[in-house]
Length: 81
Image 1 (cartoon, rainbow, N blue to C red):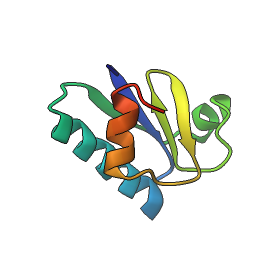
Image 2: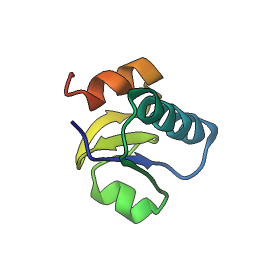
Image 3: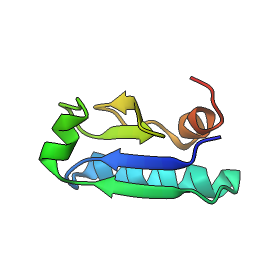
Image 4: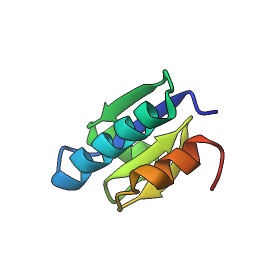
């Protein structure tokens, strides 16, 4: 099971929606894990994300340039791809 989620983005509408979806997925699964927002462009680029938003689970970039829905994030958090 995942232990940390990071949303990479500068605050655009898609980034905000992804953050909300990630928080909702964590809530629905009843998990007690951190959901962090990374807004520093240098840090985002260092992780290889050139199009925001980006979704990172336990240090692995799992989505770039799109907004996965709550159900998809729940699947990713449960170890599914």
